[in-house]
Length: 304
Image 1: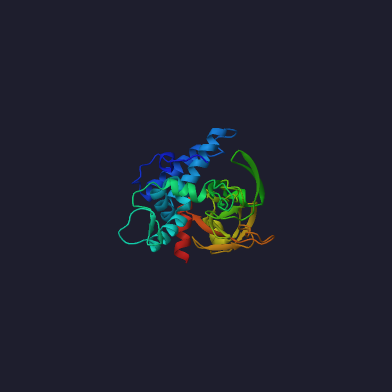
Image 2: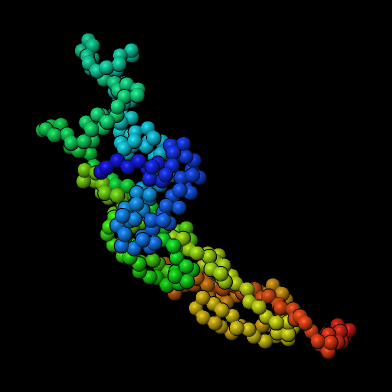
């Protein structure tokens, strides 16, 4: 697999902060997202590179290894373990390999080129009895899937394009904003016959103009006139699945709440279970009253 400069992919310098990385990733992920660039193989390739770069650079441990070992960063732990073992076998004060009094030793000097070591340890080690190539799991890919609140009222299927392949996934009803699901084996290819990584999809649920989500429950406001609030009656309220008639008790106060059971969001992976919808009444005070109407209000005021 060709070496990819992750900093260059995100348009960053090596001293970039976590905030810089996060900002660059979001900007480029939106730019090259398959939904924005359908049937554009070059954009899909860029999108995969951006996800791969973010996967490494946003993880402090992975980033440290990448900064030190470059394209061989995934083998850093094995190299360091080997280096430590070599140091334990070495005499103090020696800097090269060889023998001394029958005692074998070897060392890898500071600042040396790691590539020869990685090639010998993890490259093609031909010849009988010299061992097999180590198998390494591929990189996990991360992606965002943007949806509206109404999109997750029912389970649905969508087709995503990853690595030039179409993947049909099921989006369960009730999935929440920020929730991540894993699609096994659809990440980066493994090395030397190792397994592929996974595809991690994070859902971004856009805020709804009318309904505010709180877990499985929804909150919304509904306007009622002063006369209905005082005398009682009913009001037509909107839910995510249609309009319903809601009774209003006489003497309802501004801000009073009523619960509509089962009119909230579907509960994730629990068929037939739903949260509730909480309506908050907003009493509209009449304006531009006629003189006659004002007199009636004064009479009412004096009679109470």
